[in-house]
Length: 135
Image (cartoon, rainbow, N blue to C red; front, top):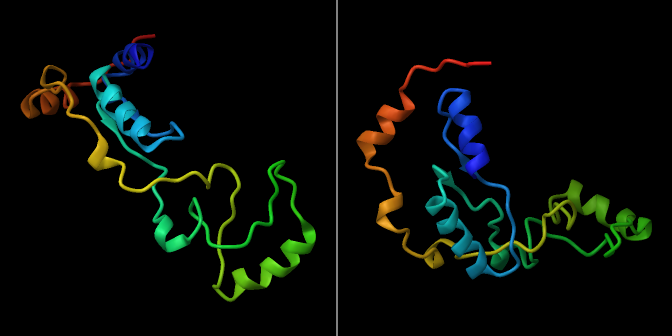
């Protein structure tokens, strides 16, 4: 985060936004969100939320397992799966990080230490600063 902050200052004070990170446990994700703010991120989101009660899977997809652990497609399963996507029964797949999603992360984010949170006026002034790129 400190390296990102230095680069942000060089390009005019761009806010630091963290969105791509992963932990297996919900409480670890929640703790990491608070730590990111405490270490200097201006904004943090949890991008890997999925309503797993709705999907019935551990991710952003509804469907049978047609991709194995080694990420090789089982073409026989694919042939059965493909028409279900066309008719809206199933969608998505457990590939490229779509699995291991979590629910209810935000209620578990610990309180961020107040000393790390800038007052709103400071943030607005900081963001409105003229930008000059020095190379």
